[in-house]
Amino acid sequence: MRINTDNEEADKLEGENPEGLAAGFTSQEVNAYAKAGSVAEEVLSSMRTVAAFGGEEKETERYGQFLAEASRFGVKKGLAMGCGMGFLQLVVFGSYTLAFWYGSKLVIDRDMTSGDMMTVFFSVVTGSIILGQIGPNLQAITTSRAASYNLFEIIDRKPHIDSLSDEGVKPEKFEANVDFNNVRFRYPTRPDLKVLRGFSLHVPEGKTAALVGGSGCGKSTVVKIIQRFYEMTGGTNNEDFYWMFVVPYEKSPTAL
Image (cartoon, rainbow, N blue to C red):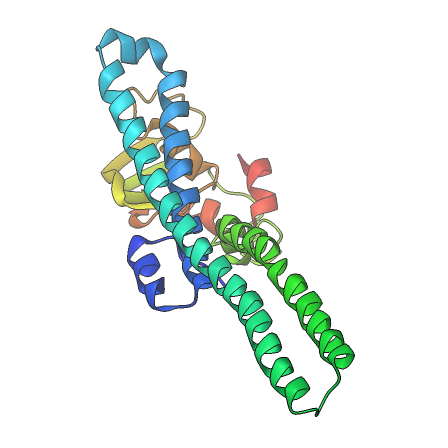
């Protein structure tokens, strides 16, 4: 069973059992910690830029927001796990009460000896204790399931560019002209962010071109598209450049 990392899906778990509820909150907690870690990595790798613009307090606040979000889901997870453990303890002590009440009734009615009653009682106690020890193990399983959600999502994903496939056109030769015409691109993990919007570029074969621009304008993205790390999400290209996207992946580096 998979655990969705969206807040909306986690809210839907409120009507489920404590284990499913805790798994949803654990997933949200892990996701929030991952975002906080990304902020820390981004700031530490660009520490001089942050200091130059006086953005220390802003970045600290942004980091703290994700930590507060993780803390909030951690508290909810603890409450859910507490309810689950409380239910298990209710079963244990409820078994004690039921055993003594019904056992005493049987002994008074002389339907059972006190020795048999104690034998049954300790059998129930032992079983209840073992049942109560399942709780921490269930918590570990729940945490691991939530943490491995993104991993299994990547494993099960069917990539658009299959490096192991031998299918595709295998031309004898072609001219390596690079020609972008109104190319559009968005990263698969961030579909809301438009990296290339109507980008056009022409580089004849054997010529050298320099891509100049500010950070985040898409310079490295263009190179990665040429190297077939990503697929374009829109736009056209000339026939020579088209071969780069239909040649089997293992043949492309030699063509480059």
